Image (tube, rainbow, N blue to C red):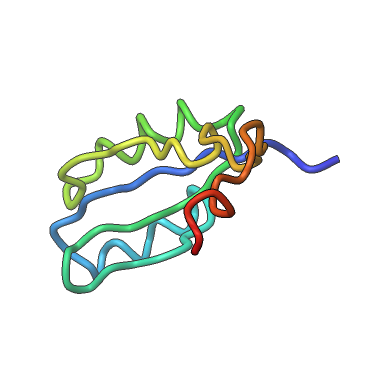
Length: 87
């Protein structure tokens, strides 16, 4: 069974030190220009890991990613009206 994962965006002040975040979860992306890290971790351990990450001196702000809560399956309930507007 695949464990449920939660994504976090972590704003950092030092990119070299941000590489050490790998021990808390999977670092997916590290932005050199905007100084943030996108990382994923197991949902059951996420609360404790965020508390520990927040204590690190190079972390400025932690935001939760809502990507897994977005609707990705769409249905086409209304009919296609393009044939009415064509010449």
